Amino acid sequence: MTVRVTTLKGAGAGRYYTERLPSYYLNGDEPPGRWWGRGTDRLGLHGEIDANAFLAVMEGRDPESREDLGRRFGEGSVRGYDATFSAPKSVSVLFGLGDPDVRRQVVEAHESAVQAVLGWIESRAHTRMRRHGHVVCVDTEGIMVGVFRQHTAADSTPSCTPTP
Image (cartoon, helix red, strand yellow):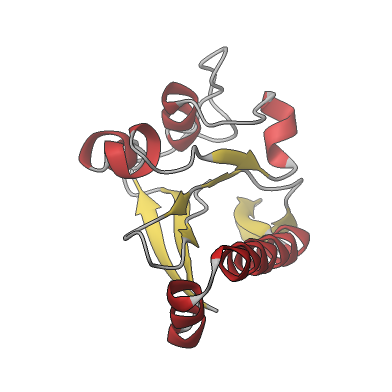
């Protein structure tokens, strides 16, 4: 598996998913996105992703109260990361040529690998902040992830894009 990570900055970072790619992530024929991670518990985010809640989180706000989550963010502040998990070509070929049972197993294996990577990231996640003029690393209390399984073609291996 390979992972491509893109940094998402500014208050409008989440709009890319709802305005520029709405049918790709939230409204189309793709499986619905799902919330993942211990950080979602604090905000009561479970199950399928709602576009308004997703945008609020990406803006750094509580989806219900609209209160700021943590410190104030500027336009250059990182709001999250888009990580695309892709299977190697050999797995894509196996999926494309396989019977329905093989395809199901490939999807299950891919999703299991994504879950393992997300679990590893969550267990080691930290943030940097200034305290008394010094930069310190602070462990997080979990991460918030929107997991989207994408089908780019009927015969391709799905990938997942977690975004906080």
